[in-house]
Image 1 (cartoon, rainbow, N blue to C red):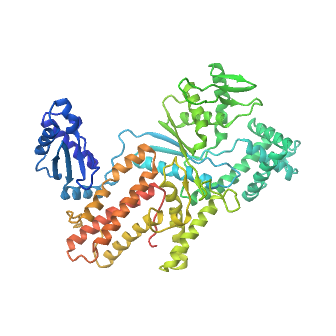
Image 2 (image 1 turned 60 degrees about the vertical axis):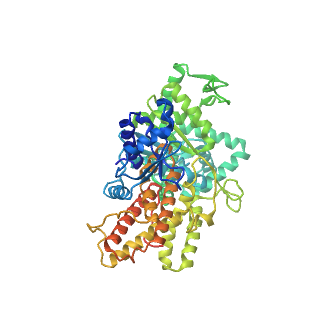
Image 3 (image 1 turned 180 degrees about the vertical axis):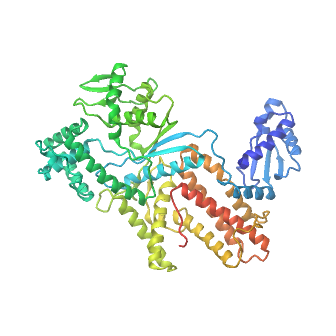
Length: 589
């Protein structure tokens, strides 16, 4: 189903061609003067120079050619040569009706679907998710859903941090605390235990203790480096211990990502790329890309037109240990071989931009993925009211589950203030609405920008918030339930969207038919905030329509059925859109 602007532009293209002008001048756009018209075409102004005619003469010819066209209520020339357009109410209603009767609200699948890998988790094993993990997780989840909606094959990869120094720190700390474990007994020859010697709660204490100790104890830190290297070289006891760390952590991470309504197709980590590293490094050396510098292996990536210094990419440290760059490059090889993606999208903190600049340049220089576009989408930070990255009252980094609990509690309090539902139902609803408050509050901001976390504003049922959007959907559900309870059939064959009769009705339908254009923008720009802006505008237009229209009090049954058909369309658009954001709506609020 073509977009409304495309259909209008086609009519103008025919008119321009029939009048002897190039159809390239026939583009129709949304009016920048909504007080005068809904759409406009300024092509006559540009065509005037080529055809050596006054622009108003060209515009008059075009408007005359379009006189009587059923698509338009008004096509008017305004000097010096603008064409103002108002779409006909009957055509608008028919277009909305067609949206109802198509699978994806009229959105056509991409003619050239892509295979995409999205790297958007980045959690480290043995560590709880904290507020810094929120943005890449929910932005990536939304982009995954938008791209799938358009028709791409999308593989979401959590890409766990499971292979760096934190592993060595945990192993050495465990060695200090439980030296009797068989993993630290060089004479042990039996199979290692199948059950881990720790719980997730233990791990969450072990890593901070080890990290703090490494800052004070140089010898301990050196032993941790050695343990990391031994793990990477395949030392069996440490590999067995590492598998325990990984298994215990992944169970906990899946539980916490599930609370965010975030899921991954792949639970691979840095370690999964390890088998590709030896050959990759050998090829770097043989081809002359890599060279030694102070004992380390590096690749120069700086280019002549750089406006700032781009440091060399370090592939291997002087002690032989791999780095994040090594693992990321090997992961590109792995993903290219396994999935042959058209694009790999990395979603992580803005502060990683230099790292990925280096990685992408090495990959391009070495031909690791010649047919794959590498994209870095950096996200800003979630800040407190002091403008700094969000912290607990004690000044520490807040765990993500604590953040979710706090905003759900705020929503629960607001629900109980109204006392319209039972306590048990309020708790269930607060979990749905609280998550929407948190995620919408984040996603409504452009991904690359920092934003301020304001629990009172995010949890509000008014304004540009998640609860407001969900309340709009619940309001529509309530009206539909009342209509059905009055003995009407919600799926009646005589339900059709009315020819528009009021300004509020037309404004609502005009907003609804922007759905396809919004999807295209959100897709091409990797921009969930486009979806948020759209559902807010659509909700506003619906609520204006609701307050100005007596839907259940309408005595003309045919007109009332038309209202219901329109409400079902708006509900479907809103529910489809919030699903793209990873949200859902309760039945009542």
